[in-house]
Length: 415
Image (tube, rainbow, N blue to C red; front, top):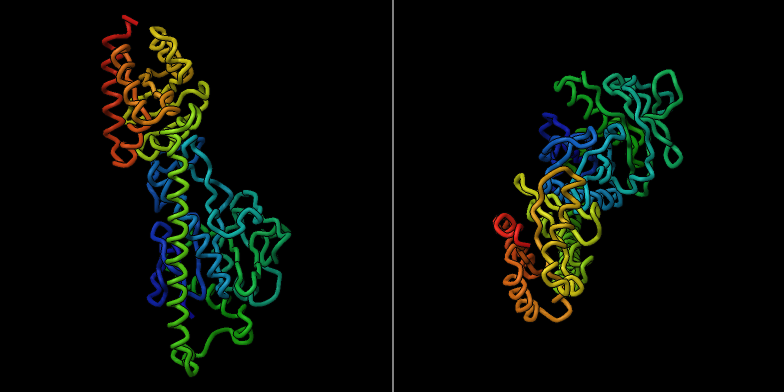
């Protein structure tokens, strides 16, 4: 039986050691023990928000991508008859950056159908087991090593342990044909590193006893690991090859679909209206490492922060272009709405979207005339944002801010 540990430190030589930020296949794995709470320690935390740790922009994107991979891999693993054992943390969340805001990420989000695993937080408590084998033997042996920090709704699973002295469920068993999911409490903070190996061995033994073909003995005979049925090795190799091919095709399909979706979204920089162009602009700024936010001061602006400076993109369409000399004052006024709300100095930048109706060539001519007519404003077009996105160079944004600050300081009084 091949055992794998996902972000659970142990010194077992025969176990496969995996980490969430380094996605890998589970083709040869029979039992996987996963510690989701470790996610907060294996990605880059940049600060806190509403009392919870928050990942940086790049690591937020990595976590979302890695979660998608592991969710698919877990689903396929269970579908092959694998046993997924999860050491469930309490229902706290990790903050991750999105284009719009900092949102909560549930530590168990990669678990397929995790939303059905409803849980509530509780103070750490001892664990008790009153059900049958193999769970009773497991908790008798190592139950004191766990601390219940969450209580579960057992509507879709079998309770296997409760908070000591109560009937509140803190551990579950769920058979998902042909595999299974076991949800255990988190390890108690007092558990020494030297005890983890014994806990993992007990988990593996319990998982082995749950398999239909291994339900009678409590462990496998020593010779079993080296015995193959005739043709078994060849079939396993072929199965692994097919699984690798399937995974490669699925990955390529998903990659192409995401690329097409991204292209369709970014196309709004070139042919979208003000709302669509600003949506795409926010994505570009986010990809370049800036914190971007929409909606705080209307749908015609996007605020962004980079390297301690704050800028505001203000969409300029045909109606605003017709303002003539009043255009610069309008753009600054819309940017100042953010300044008043957030109590910070902002730099206005005009995002010219009017030309999107007439094409890139026409946009270039029109924006040059606007730059000459309004020297106190910095104008950019969707093509400028596209160039910055393609280069993945935050220096583009810094140069826009430099130019906008200089223009604003030199010409604001004239407008």
